[in-house]
Length: 209
Image (cartoon, rainbow, N blue to C red; front, side, top):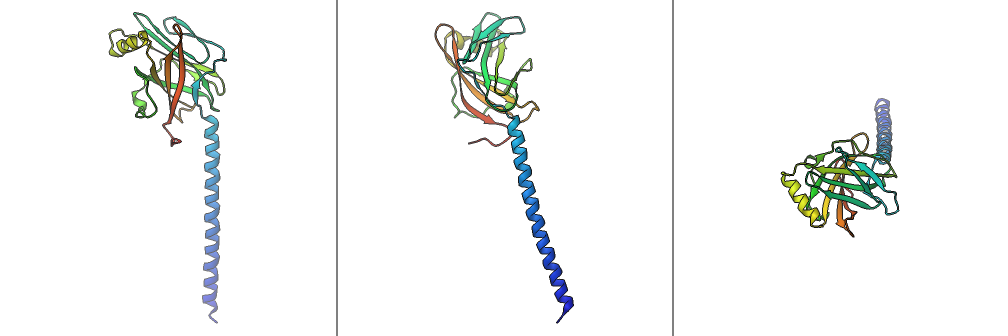
């Protein structure tokens, strides 16, 4: 018998078995790491929806000391000759703090079938707004240039008591996991506006659909 050949074959077989075991161990470790990372990110992830009707009202002060009060499940759209004030009462149903980044005003009611908004098209907020996990918060925005086309269009839509759409861009407190939520604002009795959400998009990770 060729003992040298037998020894070489045995060594090769042992190396192959060891390599297979190492490969399986690395794959298992990678899966565990991905699962741990996914669990960590889920714990930081916000998801914004309108607040509930039974939630307490929120009082908001704009930069020019204009104050508004928003009841649960409602929004504000107030028009003056110098400014248009917009706000939505929000609830964060996610497990992480939500940090608002920007917004887009659409003069019509848009469905989720419309094209996904681009992050670079959003108007930046002039102040940092945080929405605690599992709690209430708000979004606020304003138009302050009466000669601007967007001011004129928003003024016309709101005074005519027509429904419109607000897209909100936000993420977690580390600046990641950005999402876009599309809110519809609908006129109710007298000067009230009701808020509802119709679609959510993920920016930094795959969407659920």
